[in-house]
Length: 201
Image (cartoon, rainbow, N blue to C red):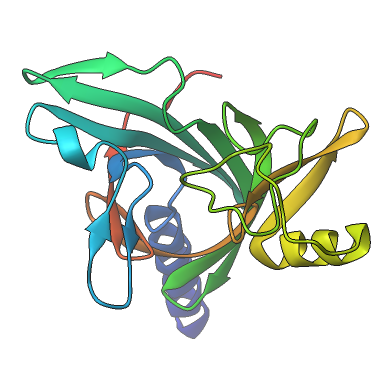
């Protein structure tokens, strides 16, 4: 009798664990390039035309076993119709591993693919350039090449590609995420992602 109770309890726990899986496909819209400074000022891509054109990243999250893939594609809405952008904001893909921690999951992801984003590796950004306003070819402070590169690396991350470097704003190459399951989807760093039909890949 006691063994039967233990067996039934283990069976129920197994079924409960299965029902709590977060494997699936999730989507949300995220403001493209959202920034909030210490004074509470808000800025994002297309803010000046937001009344007529609303720009977002359409974010797709695929979770299988302990693997996570996050794809960000720029879209905009005009007259309530969704349009796909050719490049605005860039296309970014992150991949990583999930680790269960109590009722939540921790995901450590890094950029695995990108397009239309980052500084050209033919011309590095100036050490004093602002990412949002000046991209290349601006004179930099009169410092040695090593000092200029040191200053660049304080502001930007870089990856090597085709014999040169591509520069990105700090924090864009790697992202640590906290994921919490929900009845209708998941929360990732306090943003809700709706469960949707799993993509065929």
